[in-house]
Image 1 (tube, helix red, strand yellow):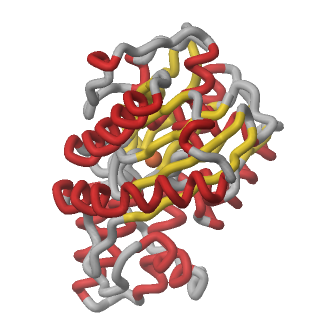
Image 2 (tube, rainbow, N blue to C red):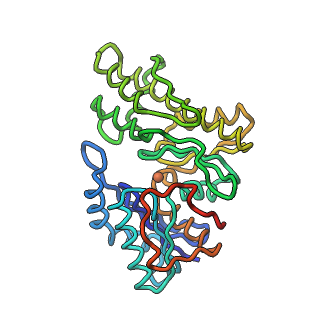
Image 3 (cartoon, rainbow, N blue to C red):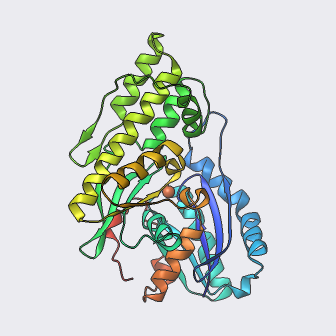
Length: 325
Ligand code: FE2
């Protein structure tokens, strides 16, 4: 089955074509600003502007034409309303024009399923870390459950906000990573693990205060920031693995591109006799291949949508999705 997937939950407009498990193309165009941050309506305008071009490129790279597409999948949840709406409209018009089935899928679950499809992970705990999202997800009781999550901002948002505060620009994650390699001096920061959840707001305030005091070097703060927050995330992920009796960890989300997080994740898994799986970066960040793949998976297991059921669900939680596959 050939599926065209469309991803538009946030700043990325992505289109991918996949044939069963083979990714034929995975194209994206992301909304950016010089100062960083997403303005939902501006991002949606960007998606409208690039829509035709990105679809065309995805078909060309896949060496297929629109009439070869047998299923169209789009991210219907969770995300920014104005952005989600553009993907839904594009998917509906493709479904109507070509008289093919349409399917809306959950973005967070798509990150997990593409990771499983591309690696040897069978039943992992996923650490999903991006700008807006920070969740520890695993399959239990016939659903994907959130075992832990951020109580305030996403971890990527923390990195971007601090990077912006110290004048590094956007996106902050890679710039903080680079800066952190210049230091090995740990400065104590708040360590905010609350039960199975994490909180980043206090760390951001504390970091800004430390930086503004002029008493600390920025590379020491960057190093300490990474060491602290990645330890927090892996502590909760490890606890979820122990609780669910699973020995696989899967990373997903843009922050999972961080080399230091990857090293620490591998180390944690090694220490407990588990395995760590990390897809290549194009499948860690927001991408449409994961939307197309989850579309195929759900369609094969009988999920069907009437056109009037394709409304977006900006606030849908991972565990609201009934897992048929
Ligand atoms: Fe994402």
